[in-house]
Amino acid sequence: MILGFRLLQKSHAKALRRITKAVGAGEALEVPITPIGMPEQCYWEVRKHVATNGGSLRTGWRLLDAMGKVVQAQHHAVWERPDGQLIDISPPPSSLDAGVPVSLFIPDDRLDIGDLAYPPSFDNISVVLSMSSHLAGYTQASQRQTTVLRAGYAKAREIGIDRHEAGMMMRHLIPCHPQMQAIAAEYYETRTAMDPFIKKLGARS
Image (cartoon, rainbow, N blue to C red; front, top):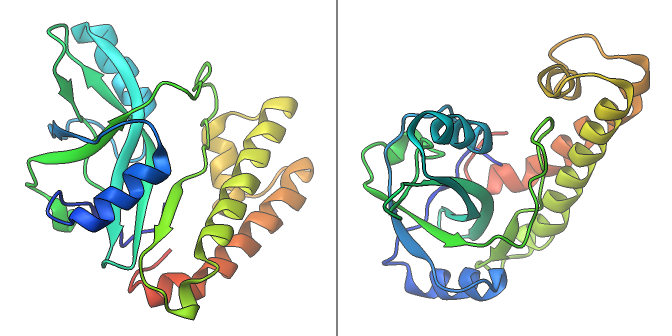
């Protein structure tokens, strides 16, 4: 996900209608936020929380907004308490949303997250609200980035590299395994391709 996205607010009715229609899994719920998990680790944090506190892991889509230009549904997991109440234990994507009481979440169990040995890496669902030409290719570029990331984790599973190490290789944080080099280079290219869109959104990768 690109930094610069914030939690979509229910008051942005038009954006909410459009992204809800794009997801096609029912209405968005306002889910209370209790940010006790690590960022970008929702599946693993919720699974761990369920093991300690009971309840279950619920999957769906957390709704995000980038300056009113792009609205996005990011596949996400929340905790369902034993009494049925949904709680989002993940921090918001932006520090500017610290203290925001709820996130908008569309429950959706159509996608299988698997054994979580590696990230599921589902495509985000994006709707470009601005008709400006500089955002016309945003969705395609974002999907390509996710496709390459997914291929990278598939290769890592095949050759026995764990998800943490594989992620660092693709982001050029540690030396790359020879069989990961081509995918890591392609992932770097996708990040570069996203730069123009990121700049237009007023964010950084």
